[in-house]
Figure 1 (tube, rainbow, N blue to C red):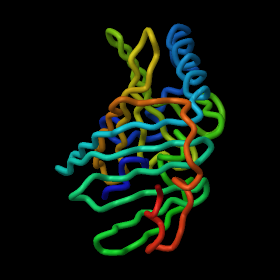
Figure 2 (tube, helix red, strand yellow):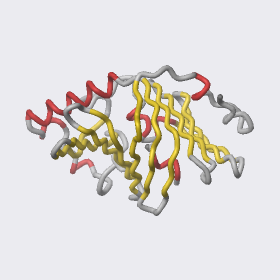
Figure 3 (spheres, rainbow, N blue to C red):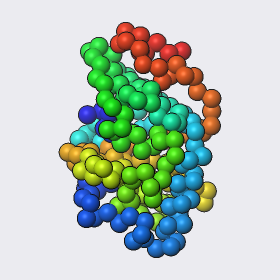
Length: 207
């Protein structure tokens, strides 16, 4: 489903026995992961266009807004009349065409990982299952320790300088959703109205 973007990684859903954790990584890898952690924690707001491609054949584009902690808005371009909003506690999926609204607990989604006030890969219930380095690229896959079968999240960065470029989510059904950021801008002031959840006939009236 569409909100799989952030529910909302790479290859198959990992099991606890596959989890590397930081203790099983090299000192150099742990240093790189510490850099990633510090980088993510410096990000307070994010605005970008996004391109989403899923293994079930879905393709879409739209606008994305993050404001930590916990706030997010995704607006999909036509012909997909969908908006997803998180106010820090609840995540709302709104289909404008069908005028249908679904509510979810933000903490039950993979989105909560990126939206945490402070992201830690050694504490806070996140387990590193895979870390890969390539020429100019770092890939970090994590799961939630309290629900490892829920799915996983892979964050993909350019290196030198470090920058978030993409993430991949694999949900519990094995559907893989790739989200690429286009022209991301960090640290911009964002209107609180973007993340305010209203009744269905008002939720999209954000200027």
